[in-house]
Structure formats: C-alpha cells, structure tokens
Length: 108
Image (cartoon, rainbow, N blue to C red; front, side, top):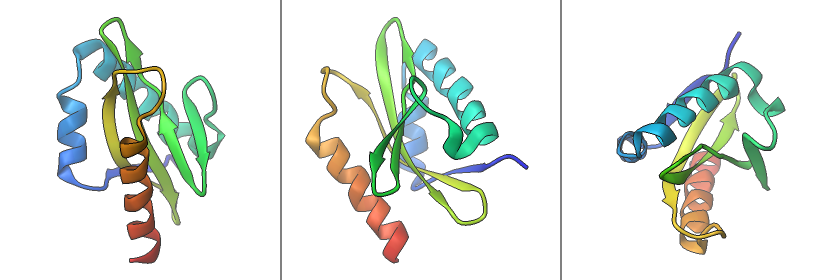
C-alpha cells in the first residue's frame, strides 16, 4: 500500500505549483517515488534533517526546489514547507519554518 501524501496548508501546494515547469515535473516524479518507497527513499532524491524532518530534492535547468516533509502514523506523509533554492546552503529561515510546522503536527 503506497504512502498518502498531504500538505500542511494549501499555501504549500500553491508554492509548489508556482515552480518552474521542469522543477515541478521532477517534484511530481519524486513524490511518486516517495509514495512508493516511503522512508526508504534516500539521496539523491531525499535527505534526512533529523528529528523526523526530511527534504525532497527536485531540480531542473532553471532552479532547485526543496520540499520539507515528515511521516505520520498510518503511512501518511505531510509536506510541511516548499521553496526554490537561491543559494548553495538551505536558508535558516526556511529550515526554521519547516521545524516549527513539524512541532505543530507532533504536539498539536
């Protein structure tokens, strides 16, 4: 049974839909892999950030996207935050927001 993918908020999905078309296409491919493989998905497609936070790593000619997600009980995946990377390093503000949303989900 595949994992069910959902979004923390409609704005997260809207952000992803606004990405450049080839980054969006790669995201769609990676989400299918995530739904199929769950926590077994690893680099270069997914990377663990610790404390139950992971990132999906779509890319295209015009940019690199990042989508932070977590796993919930019952084969559920929640995409917490998404953005287009503009630098080599993941900006602290983006990571902080994803961690805040993860805590909200874990602790109500």
